[in-house]
Image (cartoon, rainbow, N blue to C red; front, side, top):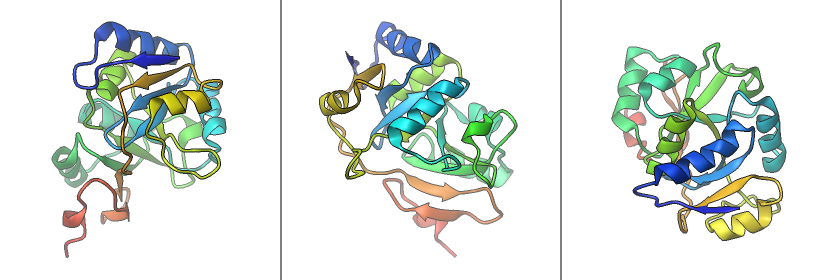
Length: 205
């Protein structure tokens, strides 16, 4: 099912419709500021397992939560004063920050290092969905099954994955550019992937 939603001014009724699928344990494709992504409710274990199957992701692979603000981030990831300042500087934006997970993070999402990825994308649709759901959304980039390439066309995404998901939000073409990943779970920031977000200030001596 394709759901057209205005990417700059998302209609509340349409957002509520999309979120209703998440609340019922479904998987929805939605836009972020770096790509289209699969999303589900982290409290719905079967939904998480379904998303892992769709993405063919191994368990114990780092998973990310899309949050609405830093207050919500702090419920799921431990932040020092230093890391809080960094997140405040960079978010909303195309970054994924790796933090030590709190006890609120579902066990199925935890890595062996007990870490979690957190995002606040600069995308009105994603933020509206999180607010409507009342909690973060698990997120994973939509990629082709055979070539592992990011997909940009919502109609193509629906054609390929429509049988396995409940809805695809159509916000037009998104030319994918992966978020930058920065690990803040240790004492020193570590850039794990240079992507769309500027990481130069993390690399300064």
